[in-house]
Length: 345
Image (cartoon, rainbow, N blue to C red; front, side, top):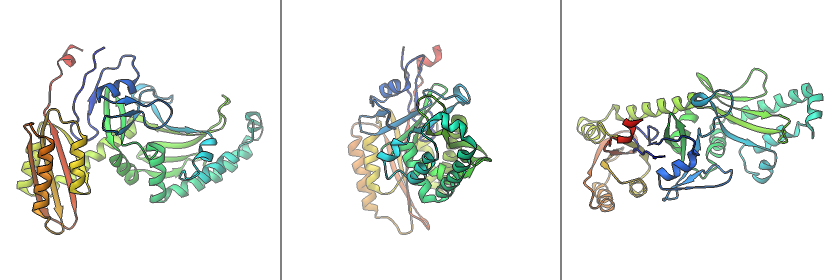
């Protein structure tokens, strides 16, 4: 089997890596594509890159509730022992109270189902109230999706690995997902126009009774992330001065692009060290600030980047403008390279 590879473009999430899979484990293929290693076990980190960045791969084995490209993906499924080990798990005390509602055996659960569901409803309402708080929801989603260690969420879709930066996923889910209970108060649901994900109890008599389960709809969440990240890029460029905007457009036009929002000039240098450098076309730094940034610091940053990229022909530039807020944006574009093997499929 021949592995095919393409660079990131459009945004962090858009067609970052393309491969044919035909029967192989997606984690193994993705690791080969980025020259990383597969991390064995059940933790959130599935693959580690050569730069010690961690990736969580979703979509490699869709769950029931929709087949193939529109199936459900498992965010987590935990038994009570998880919350004994991780006492700082966000909402952990409430979740332990939910588990406490269940009798020791599945047979007893069947006999007392009505009374138990009434108790579950009270605790699920508590869990919803907890997650309505932005800070609580942020910590919960970080642990649920990233376990505080993962840097990128990867969704496999239509034979493409779409790579989403952790911060982008966080930003979209926190801004746009509404938290509710379902009609029977047996679940906590996250919605944006449609049902995106939910937290429910799994009571199947399969030796794992009971467990807490968080599935997400692959298609709905994938579309949400793509839509909102595109909007973010468009909004960032909306008020761009003509001269700066022209440089950005020249950097990204007809190219495959990574877009990052950075906190400091120093983090840009580290970012350039970490990214894949083959086939880069251009790098542009856009700075907006309340006060004019020290031009010397910007020049020093560009020199550091130039040193990292020594020997490569790359368009490198920066632009600054005054505004009522501080923001540093980084655009990294790659030349598109036609994959000959793709034509043969």
